[in-house]
Each structure stands twice: as structure tokens, then as C-alpha cells.
Image 1 (cartoon, rainbow, N blue to C red):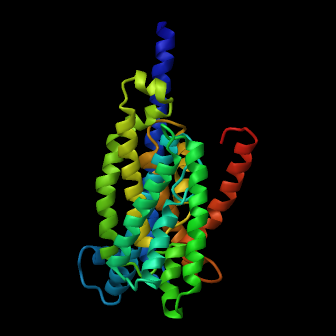
Image 2 (image 1 turned 90 degrees about the vertical axis):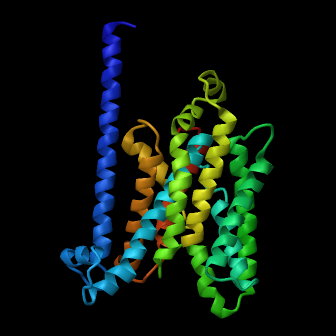
Image 3 (image 1 turned 60 degrees about the vertical axis):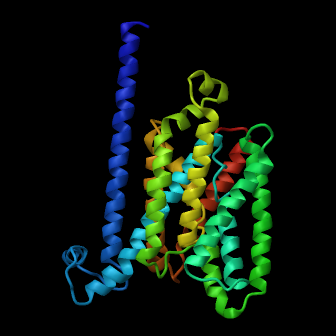
Length: 343
């Protein structure tokens, strides 16, 4: 390779690093600004100085309850759940090399939701019992989908088709259980259907934070191997990537992230599906999309929650807002994929 060619390669790498760093800084700044706005605004406005005093642990009449008890848990849970959905979706889509291979398309979120609705309506569970039941069911549904898709390996297209079929069965099951539900269980059950951070508490955020540290950390450790898998199995093996070990770690960590976040908020639809494509568009395919997708996911959930609560004629859970954003993109992606184009 000539000196000129080497210089061009180095310049391209430097430009990609600069673009990625700029995008990460921009996304972090937007998320921080939205977080501060979510703490200050609502039915009433709380001056930023009072918000800061509450965060420092001072007792501020009025603001301590509004900010500390209502807005802060809601905003924290929105950020953590959004990051979990974003990173989990990006890992799935990267590993399977298919933008449709998102947990909310192939039914993993619905598995947790179906278990939660069944637990509430039929078993009479509540609180932590529902969350644990939902996490276990989410993992079980993921294993079922992977098992039914396995033919000496995982094909992204086969997994998506199996997942869509399982999702349809789960939706039918949920509809049947809801049709038998007493009226007093419907509100809690519907939260699990739509995805919401209403009435969030700090104790709901702690498991999601732990999942982000454990499962998100595992994904970041495997980020380079995950990117190599996009080159195909043969090329990845030639480069010394442990393919099977990487896939197992990525699948367990991704499903763990999605299941725990769904247990805390319900299925906030299309966040996992949208986050990675947006992140890739912004960063220009430079490096792993896990962290950018996590930041995009957190931004989508935090902004979507505020829009659903205060900027629409009626109050809607955040899952309704994100579904309205994601459905048109899904239709566009299916049309473009069917047409043989590259999404």
C-alpha cells in the first residue's frame, strides 16, 4: 500500500472517530437537557435552582415532593429503560444482520407482557411477583424462539418469521386473558400492554440499573466481536472471533436487558427497533452502535413520555407515542426489504 493510500486510510479513520465522538457528545447533551427539562416542567414549573437543591438532598417546600417523589423516579426509569431497549435492540440487529430482528418485532417483549397479564388476572400476583414472572417468561419465550429457529445455526430471516408467529400467538393469548379479566385488574394489565412510566418509583429503577451494569457491560465487552460477526461467519472465524461464545453471550445479555426493562415499564414498543438505525445514521457506521443506540433509546423514551403526558390533547402512555413513531418506519422497512433494497 502506498504512502498516499495509507494517509487516506488514516484520515478516514480520524474523520470517523471525530464524527462518532461528536455524535456521542451531542446525544449526551440532548439527553441531559431533556432530563433537566423533565425535572423542571410538568403541571407546574419548578425553577432549576430548586431542582438542584432537591437533588442535593435539601428539603424544599413543594419541590421536594413534586421533583423528588414524582418527576425524578419517572425520568430515571425512562432513561434506564430506554437505554436497555436501545442496547438490546442494537445487539440483536447487529448479531443477526437484519434491522427487523428486534425484540419487539419477534415477540420477546410480548412474552414478558403475556406473563405479566396472566400473573395479574389469573394468578393474582402484584408488585415484584409480577416483575419476576415477566422476566422469567421473557427469557423462556426467547429460548423458545431460538429453539424453533435452530437448524444447525441461527438464520436471521427464519428467527424473524418464527418470532412473528410466536408474537401473534401471544397477542391472542393476551386478548383472551383480558376478555376474562375483572374490571379492577384491567388498568394494571393495560399498563403491561402499552408500556408506561406512570407512577414510577425508585425501587423499579434499581433492577433496570443492575441489568444495565451486568448485561450492558457484557455486551460492551463483546462489542468488537459483535461487529466482526457482521462480516459473516466465515470471515469472523478467519479473524479468530469465537462465534458461538459471542452469540450466546450476546443473546443472554440482550434478552436480560429487554426482559428486565419490560418488567419495569411494560413493552415500550419500537424503541429497541428504532434506536440502532437512528444511531447508525448519526454515527455513519463508525464503531459499535451499542452506546449510541442506548442514548437514542433513552432520548426516545424520555421525550416520548413528556409528549404523551403534556403535549397531546389527552394523556397517553409513552408506549403509544413510540408506537406511533415506529409503525411508519416498520412499514417503510418492510416495503424496502421486499423491494430488494438495502434498509
